[in-house]
Length: 304
Image 1 (cartoon, rainbow, N blue to C red):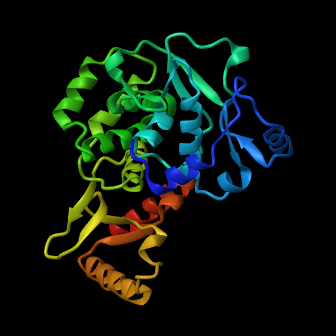
Image 2: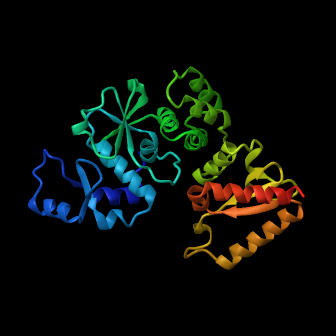
Image 3: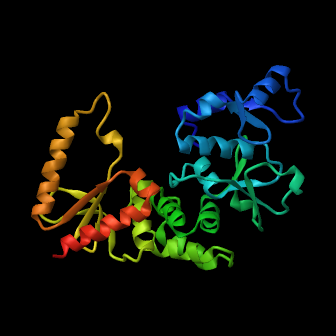
């Protein structure tokens, strides 16, 4: 598992609060006062630390903390995707999903943990030093079960982008996967998975469009007679660009130059007859309905 600097820093703040550990009076007082907050039944972290980090880092920390104190269950679904470095959608993750042959009795279950009773083979588990997760493909299946088609397509696109699997392998695995609750979402995700998207926001935006009924949605397309490649081309008429703030800010970024180049690019594409709209990843992830409304309006303009 990739241990980036922020992951190392977060883990260094973890406090062991398992019942089998002789927890000091100071730690108990910090828990009672709210200075420490539990990430799982056995791991806490300073509230001031966890409240300052982005959502995806909080989700990673919760997933790690739950998995680290699990006895036999393995982390799966969106939580496992965070730990494995797979693409994930930056939306709230209400629970950490754990795959298990036999869920523990309710009184002993960890809070905010979803236990999935299901068969799994030893070769569907990645054994880590501190915890275990499902393999990327099994994780994709459990994301389909847990969160549906759009999240599953993001995971399936990552399987291809990362070269974890090539398309024929992914299709073969899907054909031979036994039925389970959520297999329809998984099959649809495999049907639409492509190598084109280069980030989770691009993949999720494409998933939102497909889920809304659009079929001609191409990723990272070179526009003829130009030197420009666009994030998404819809119905051969509408260009959608997904840009985060990092493109415009930073010590080494000339914002004025970036904006000028962006305008020249947009002018060239519009002069060729394309309609062009831009969104941040947050725009799409936080309000897909508003995004789709804008897309429909822009397509109507493009077709006039």
